Length: 370
Image (cartoon, rainbow, N blue to C red; front, side):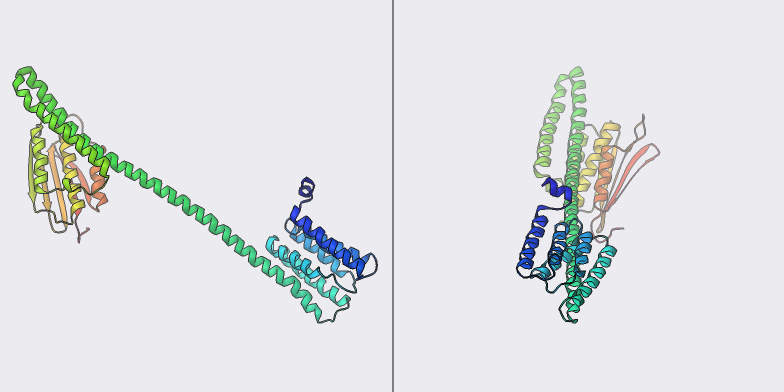
């Protein structure tokens, strides 16, 4: 094995070359095809180069075809098989293309000369050319198909990797969505709990009997928070029929905010259609996030919520007194509002005018996507 590797051949090709050489020698000994010595030289010179037909196809074809110029009185029985194998390998493995072309022309010329020097008729020279050119063309075709298969395999692997990356991206997006849902739920409800806890603390210090109401509100909010978290983790779906922005649902949302100490006014005009579930859910989440931000960053200041349902869009405007200490900066809450609006093809804007912080969201509901 090591010796064959050092010689630049393979066990298969070396064995093939030896087998054809032995078969040819047996023939020329039994039925001579040339003067003694020339027949054996022809057989060895044309068969042994098969050992390098894939590792050095150009050199092997040049050497083998050179021995065709030896004058013969016959031809080995398996000689045509050797020629076909040698020049098919030249077409299939030879590089560069120019070297393959030059070698093919040389071998075709040598085949013509060898044929004319032998006992065959001159017309046999045509067959001598075809036996060289045809295998080379077949080898080039197989080489082309082999390259195409390799490219298709590589492309398939790339597509598999792209699909894997797309699946990973989808998983990441779903994780981000779940995180946003949990932030919306927990942020809103925990803010209400914190406000009620402060009220309970003040009541306990001044009038303990008045602490029952905020404590009960804390208990109710905590149970509702647990239920909503379970819903997010169990369903993991953007459609939430319990969170539709109907007037009753928004009224309940603002009533809970008032109970937590956030003075909230709600104005709703129109109502969502049955096929507006996605926009309805987004409005519900946006209003809840705005109330959460107002209670967290501007506690005790009034909040005005306006929801206007039109045939082609819904517009949400939420305003409250801007925080006194620092200007509003985009955080997870505002980023989540923007993402919800943009996901449905809508627009989002914030502004601070005259000490009032406002959120304006417009979401198309069908027909109008301006």
